[in-house]
Amino acid sequence: MITKCSTTQKLDFLRDRQILIFLLHDTCMKMTIHEVAQCLNLHVITIERWIRQGRIPIQKTGNGYLFNESALKKWAKMYRLPFSMPEKVKSREYEEKPENLLSAMKRGGVLHDLKGDDMETALKSAVDHMPVLSKTSKKELYRLLLERERLTSTGIGKGVAIPHPRDPLSDAMNSPIISTCFLEKPIDFGAVDDRPVFVMFIFLSQSIKFHLHLLSRFSFCVRDSSFVEFLKTSPDETTFFAKIADFEKQLDRAET
Image: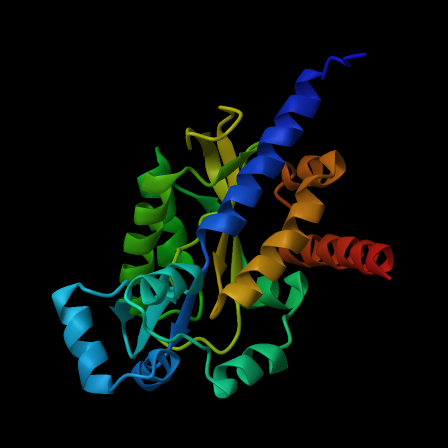
């Protein structure tokens, strides 16, 4: 027997599918050139030359190098090169303890009445008002966010968007940041359900591990229709953080 899905169920499925796509697409790791050389058992000079020549699937960014582990493994296998993660990198990934949403959101702040007539101008307004980041980092972030939106809209439905760069910023980040950005008016974001976006959550993480962890926890909140209705009230910072703390307690209880 086939059960017909309601429109709400279909939209929820599309939103969850969109979040899954983000989890699968944004999987770059950041390491030093020496760690990359260790992975492939090659000299640093060789790695640097191959990167300049575009012969290896690695991208230089700031003082580090970005690569997709799966893609680099396949590349190494194709050229019959060894590949193994250095113990230092493995232990670093293991020792890192992902933070919760609340701490990342407090760091990023809650912004209200951000102006913008479209996705580009709304993102520009949001980035310009984000705390902590330097002027140079804001310029880089805006460029990376636009590049990300050109791949696939981060509008996940119900008026919510989660803009985020595929790659970490060049400036070293010690802790993740999530800026909550309430727009002055809803805008077209090319969202999965075609609804205009009224709030953006800009995710910035120093590693894919933190990014996936926070995105997973956020998806728990946005699945709840009462949370989305709460967002529509454009709550003040204190009220918003209290709601996030409550949802995270629910999530922690569900995971134990």
